[in-house]
Length: 319
Image (cartoon, rainbow, N blue to C red; front, top):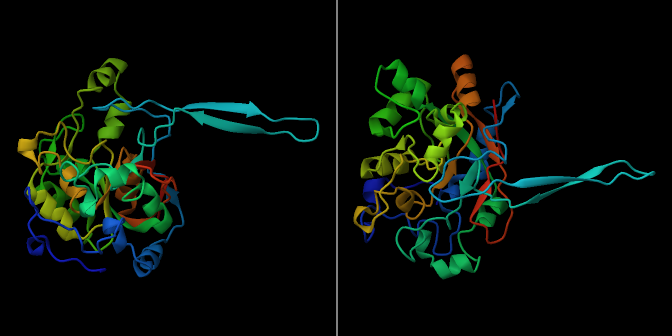
């Protein structure tokens, strides 16, 4: 299947919302990445006009506030210089693939306990056989990306917005940014959501950064079924943002609030949507403002790590 039904036409999910399970077959491990077809990737490549790339990722050692502790990598360089050959090698320890710009695989969060995307069990995930990052690595992540500059759209519309707080972006805010960008969504798109959080965070003094660890507050899409319906009906394969959760935080992860209190449950667990987090989108947003072009060709190479739950994004946007 390369075309999707609308959200309202999906079957109801057992604990609320609607289900995208089974659309690509019972054994599917790609989710909406299936929409990144060779034809769509080739069409996206034709968007390249300038031949210049923008790196939408942070350095692998950059650390951000987390609800759960995630340590930064430590790098060592060893000299291999000899009389015959100068050189050196690098070794990295304590490397956490989801500590900086990253993808969440479909094994990261489920719809409900022991209900991962497409009915996969937690045991299958732990065995490294289903929904893990290596499935995307073998397929490849590439296609048309569209940048929605929510921070700029809200500011120019005179609407209240705080890139360093819990600003919830609803359907109206997403549509405001889409119209400002002058783009229409197409199947297989990668939506890049620029909230301004990452640029705000790196400028903060250490005491502010410390206060956010374990108690983060960031902008993001609001916790509502309306946002889920909007994102599904965009028929995008992925959404990536410059926050660590795509959705607004704090989230309500209680069973009573499921499945919309923590949208990962729906976006990953039911839709099979690829979520990118902590991307550096400020440079790309400035570039889009400067040339008025908010669509581009994006290529990402997640780690081919069998059984992996997440991966550095390793992405480049080419215009």
